Length: 221
Figure 1 (cartoon, rainbow, N blue to C red):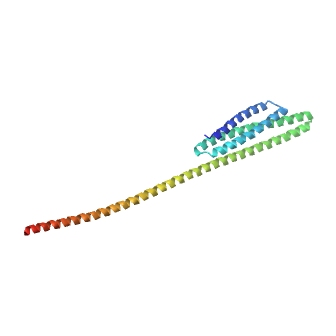
Figure 2 (cartoon, one colour; figure 1 turned 90 degrees about the vertical axis):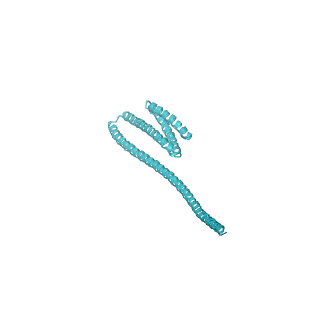
Figure 3 (spheres, rainbow, N blue to C red; figure 1 turned 45 degrees about the horizontal axis):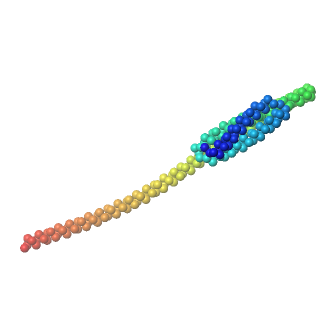
């Protein structure tokens, strides 16, 4: 595993644990203290997002065998971060609702209370729709990233297969050259053997003729 990725991962885990504690404590606060705590949490969430982007870039630069494991772990961290964001939105929404209720109670006006309640209902509906839209955008982005990862992996596999085919082609070309050289050597050997047969045959014929001549002269004398 990359030491750079491990460094980012360690920072993220520490930051995530700290943010979880702050979110828990923020639910117990009210007023300005709660707003200050929420502001700190949002800053921490931005830092966490930056660390996740760094981990994502580092993971994509690693070999496929390591990259797949790190990206799977990274998706878990992204899910964890989205859960923290959802919790912060819930706290913020609760804080806004509480402030609105306090303002209505101070005014003591029933008509204003009803109107504010209606506006608050519309606001909650709009917020819910916005959250749903954000979820769809995040899901689309996640699908796009997964598709990109798959495409990069396929391209790498194709590149490796191309290298293997080129290596096999070079090997076959070398074998073909060796076969051609062997064929030439065998042809030359065959020619030499044929020539040697003719030479040996000629020598034998000369010897036979010489023997016959010697016998002939001996029989005459």
